Structures are given as structure tokens and as C-alpha cells.
Image (cartoon, rainbow over all chains, first blue to last red):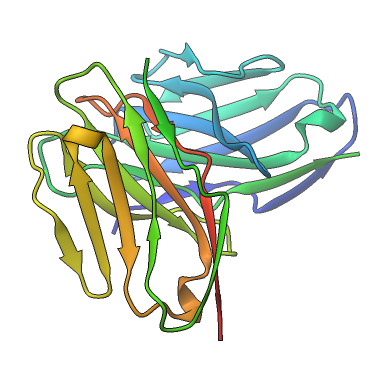
Length: 115
Length: 114
């Protein structure tokens, strides 16, 4: 069964803290993604990675960085958390292998609150 | 430019009514894929369907059906005889051939009342 896991479902941090959100997938997918979801704004892509140590900025990378040292793990880092980064963060992975099941699979999400 | 538009922000229906969620897309790619996802109140996005740009055959799965029309760049989703459990936010998405970039619509919130 396909699985994308995220380290926390709920997280509360203080302004200025460094925050790590971890995502692990067990499907040997090449591509991994971090999105944030806010009411009325849908899903917005923060960063994605198409291979180990490779990363590409998405639509809203400011204030975030990422790390992909292993194929199965993609970390999102908030260097200095701010209240406007309070949001739902969704991790996803995908691969195209010519199979009917190819799609983008999502983790359960991390609801981050920055106080 | 790639873009997905879901013009309906929120729809409310009474149980057993049929409801159609609209999705219009823009792309310059000749090969592309379209998706629908469901996000229930629990928050996790659940994959519903994927269609290829070269296959316009409509699909039915139980109470769900999808109508893909390249001529109007639309990929609409119909729920027949809606149920309360269908209440969720539904997202339409577009991707290129290698699945390394996805474009999501803003979502349609469906409320099914008993």
C-alpha cells in the first residue's frame, strides 16, 4: 500500500524558532513536493525535488528551505518561523512509470501554528 | 502557461441530488494528465482519478463519473445521488508527462445536507 508519512499532525512553535517538517515515502518515488494550504488559496507549491540533492523553487519559496539527502525523505525547514507561516503543510510524492496507478500521493498533513 | 480553474468555490446540495463540479484547464503541452482529488475534513488528499490527454473516454465508477472534453478544456466531475459522506473539498489538478510538476485548482467545497 502506498504511503507518505509526515512527522507530526499538529505542531506549535514560537516566532523565530527553526522548524523542521519531515516527510518520508516508501514508494521509491523520484519526485517529492511540499505544499502549503490556506483557506481560499488552495494548494501552493513551496519546493519540489526530482532527485536526491536536487531541488526546485515552487511558487512561494520565501522563508523556506528544503533538504533531500535520501530518496525517501524530504524535509522542509522554516529558518525563522513567523506567524504568517501558520498553515497546513502537505507533503507529496510522485513518479511516472507508465502504470495506471501513477499519480501524486499525499501525506496526512501537518497543521503548524506559529505563536 | 499551465492553469486550472475551479470556478465554484462552494456548493450545497441535499442528499440524493446529483451535483457536477467544474474544472477548466489551460496547457500548451500535447501530452498531459488530469486528476481529481478529494479532501475530507480529516485533511488528507485522496486520489480519485487520472485521465490522459489522449484518452477522452468518459469514466464511471459507482456514483462518480468524469467527463473529459479537450475541445472545451474541461474535466468535470459528477456525483450521482450524493451522500453526506461526499462532503469534502474537491481539487482538480493538471500535470505534464513526467509528473514532476502539478497545478491545482483552488478547490470546490461540497456540502451535502441530510
